Image 1: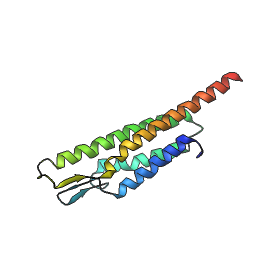
Image 2 (image 1 turned 90 degrees about the vertical axis):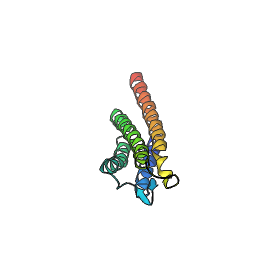
Image 3 (image 1 turned 30 degrees about the vertical axis):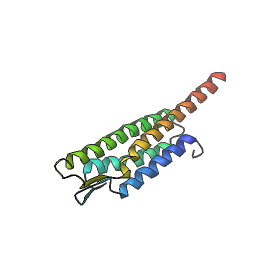
Image 4 (image 1 turned 135 degrees about the vertical axis):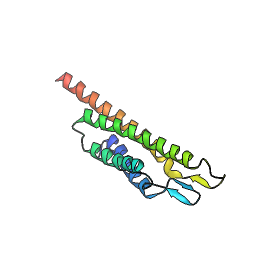
Length: 136
């Protein structure tokens, strides 16, 4: 359900993940590192919004939703590490001032925080449902 706060968090993760696919995250001596610069980065950048969007509609299966969110956090961490490491490896031999990181590098870290908040919200829902079942 979209009115749950964790669904809003996951929707924001999905939107931000799709948006960063259209912008380069770094420039190296005039060439851009972006979504299409590597198969690994492209695959991870494609999987993250798909999994986050699917997790929104699994509100009846909260444990599965939490697992998908945890998997999304791992993918986001890999994405952030890959972006930074690939930038520094590619910029290693270049002169100063010819390589720049852009704002899309921050987005995976923001998404990790939002996904963590979604996991906490799902956990609270699960605890509330179990408490209600115990009272019946």
